[in-house]
Image (cartoon, rainbow, N blue to C red; front, side, top):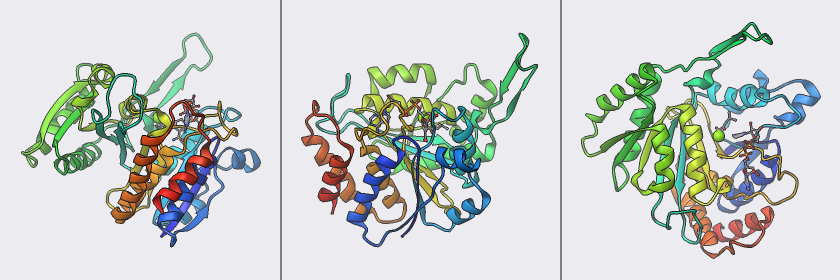
Length: 339
Ligand SMILES: NC(=O)C1=CN([C@@H]2O[C@H](COP(=O)(O)OP(=O)(O)OC[C@H]3O[C@@H](n4cnc5c(N)ncnc54)[C@H](O)[C@@H]3O)[C@@H](O)[C@H]2O)C=CC1
Ligand SMILES: CC(C)CC(=O)C(=O)O
Ligand SMILES: [Mg+2]
């Protein structure tokens, strides 16, 4: 397995080191090539993601990424110029984000077993495409736009993927989350697409919720969700809420998938570079390890993914919730349990 590794910034390198530890324990054949991308390279050279590096990344089976973002770099430079560029250039149109409450993990309201959802977030469109601009900058009459792009092609492929995932799960239930009562143009495209594709999946029951109500139900009644399909911005926001009710952002995994298989898919924790705790060795690497599980599943090695997920489930069921997290200790434990 040829793996490109982009540790990135802040806690990224800390959690990626543990993810690799676990990956090597279950898949000794992994050939990992590190790529120095992120704040340090930008400071040194002004580069974010040179074309030559992008070409090299394309030659791998998958990418494991930590996080990007640094307080010493203006906001958006790394996020847009590196992370979103990777997702867009590699056509990562499905951003897959499971959220499950494991035994032994404390949630503000729910009990273990009550939350097991899979968020299918669109990854290459919506308000993240950079379609906008600024007029009359730095005047009292400044105007800033950030236009959401939604194409029939892009919406259809992510909705179809969500139905395929839903039909393969026991509950076979899909919820579209949007804001169709206000964002009527994009909302209509999403609603019509869900309705059209649903005809091919008669076993799947379909629900709809406005995103504001959905954030409330994530807290008060998360068990109602099975598979969720939503746009890029709503998916970004609701998956942080889902993380909070399933034990915290340090446990939330994700995969950025090019479902067609043309480009390598990229796996990363949902969280960012967490500058407030970087360098202290206290970041929870569980999200990265679970992302390694998604990576193995995606590369057709489900038996190895099961080992990783079982190790995490066991570790979480036996963790002392009051003990301070030590990043490398958790990685050591998960590697030993997986191998
Ligand atoms: N995929 C990516 O690379 C992402 C990058 N970012 C970037 O990261 C930087 C920080 O963003 P924030 O909004 O603060 O989000 P964040 O996810 O980095 O941190 C939010 C809070 O969660 C905590 N946290 C995050 N990961 C944790 C872990 N593994 N273990 C324990 N605690 C953890 C942090 O300490 C912080 O208090 C920004 O530059 C942002 O743009 C944010 C989200 C995703
Ligand atoms: C920094 C953003 C571009 C990414 C993000 O917050 C996410 O994908 O969850
Ligand atoms: Mg986010």
